[in-house]
Structure formats: structure tokens, C-alpha cells
Image: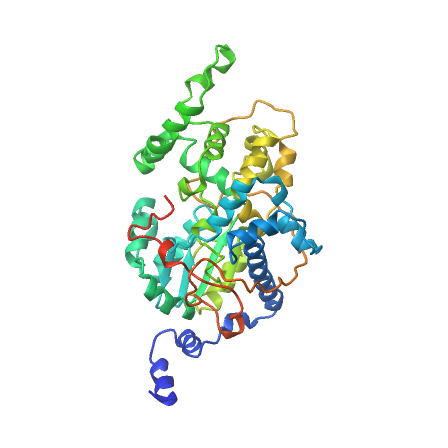
Length: 434
């Protein structure tokens, strides 16, 4: 096929502008097209750079021996970013370092939803605007009367419209699509998941047939409930659902690969060390980031979704967060931090506000505040300061994983050490992380 024939064939495909971009491998979403987008494009690139630096610092692109050797001695790089990314190493044992290194090699496609018609690939992160994007993708698939369907039906329909693709097909398609995911503070996701799935067993029974109480809630209560003879603790002793602290104790005692997808770390759900995303959106800038994605796919007038957070008008966001995390000790919060350490480092979230909550005197706070059945619930305000970043030195050492085709970048990013280990890809059932 000559160039003129190829050009004409593209013109007759739907979403012409997008198809042209795909055909000629020109990532036009990197080029500002509206006033003020320059800052946004730079921010997206900064987020991507941070992910690469975090993956490099924690051994995703090197051998275990080299990573452990580097981790056990002081770094000669005194840059601010390098210090932030490596300062937790000294707090971890060798077995913990080995475990993080091992997890950094994982690759999963189970959360991928590829819209070939509109050249979009979304990695679904539960409790991070997933309901909003679920509605958007169903709209793009032409589904009518979405609001009348229950959540189980919507999720089933989403996978029906966007089935899991084989690895070989993904490798061909993904580089021609705009790949994105939405991230959120790890502790906000944990709280949102608890309130939605485990805090109210009656709602779980009504909405999901009691699935989460049967699989998780009952087991957590049996393992972590400590009976007391105090009359003041009657409501605690007779409480059917696990308390937030009991849920956290369960998380601390459970390997992250056994976590349910609603509280599984993002670095395991979407494996950003090995899949190069074009846009890493954040809950803190959700509306603006979503608008950017849709505009640069020519879909601003096609998708009609409300991107703002749901909030409980009777309580301020910080009060809701405080009422739960103030139940924990500083040791428990720090241990939970290490469970989600790669997420904190990759996506630049802060532990300190949550540690400070544990210093607050305990009070009688309600343990049964019903949350909205949505993933856009409560989030803790973060400082909006941008941090410096520095380029990592090239790591020429071979990785232990097999190098395969880059999933998603053009030639200018070929120096990015992007690979996928076929032996660790999601199996047919998509449960490779169970």
C-alpha cells in the first residue's frame, strides 16, 4: 500500500483525526491545543517521569542482586528526588526489599479496557473514579439507559463490550491508543473501599448479595474481634461488620497479592513500570484531566459524565478521614504505608497527614457512617506543590525478565526500559494476582 492509498483509507474510518494520529504515530495529545494546556502537558510528563524514577529506584529494571547491593549502601546521588525515593530502604529488611523487587516485575492486563473505535485504553483502578469512567466507556459503546442498570450489571456489561484481549493483540493495538489510568491517595482508596464494601453488611446484601461480608467481613471479625466484658463495649461485641481497625489489621497480615481489587495497590493493578501510560490522571485534578483526555480524543460532546467528587454534606472531608484514621496507632499507619509504598512513591502521595491523625486523642467517633456506593467519595486535601525531578542514570544491566515490544510509546521514548514478562501475564481468567 502506498502512502496516498493509506492516507485515503484512513480518511474513511470513523474518528478521522484520531485515526490519522494513530496511522502516522503522532502523539498529538502531547501538543497543547487550547490556551493553558502547556502547563497540563508538562505536568503529565512530570508524572510519567516520576513513575519511571520510582520504578528504577526500586529495582524494576535490574537484577535482584544489583538492587539489593544498591539498596544496602548509601546512595552517592544526593538529589532531592533520589533521597525521597530511596529513604525507606533502610527501614526494610532484606526479605521485604526482595518482596518489593519481586512485585515490581509483575505485569497484569486484567484491568485493561481497550476501545479500538476511539483509540483509548483505560486501566480501571477501583475506588479511583472507576464508576465515572465505567459510565463513560458504556456511553462510548452505545449502551442506552445506563442509569437504570445495577452496578453488577454495569460491570458485566463493560467487560462484555470491551473483552480481554490476548497479549499479542494488545501489543499491536495499545501503541496506537491513548493509554491512561486514574490514581488516588492509597489511604483514601483503603477508606473508600472499607466504607463501600465492608462497613454496612445490609447494603452489601442488598447490592451484592452479601458477597463482601461472606468472603471478607465474617472472616475478619472472626480473626480480629476481641471480646470484652465492659458494658460500654456492647455495640462493639455485637457488631456484625468488621471495624475499620480490624480491616486494617487484616490488611497488615495479608500479602498484597491476595488483596481484593478494590484495595489492591495500583502498581499491581496497572503495572505502570512495564506499561507506559500516556496520561496518569489524579483524583485531585480529575475534572481537568478527564476533560483533557476526552478533548484530545474528540469526545467532549460525546461523553456526558459528572466528574466531581461525591461528598457527605454533613461532614467535612478532613473530619471523615480523621474519624477513621485516628482509630489507628502510628505503628499501624506506618505498616500500612509499607504495604502501599510503591504507590506512595510513584504517584507522590504524602504519609505525614495521616501519621499526625494518630497523635490526636482518641474520641468516641461513629464506626458506622454510611458511605456512598461510588468510588468518588472522600479524599484528603494534599499540598499542591510540585517537586523537582532529576533524570535517572541509564542502567545497562540486563533485566531478568524477557524484553518484549514497547507497549505504548513512539521512538523518542525508546530509551524507557519497558518490557513485559509473558510468563507473568494475566491468565485466561484474569486472576493472576490472586
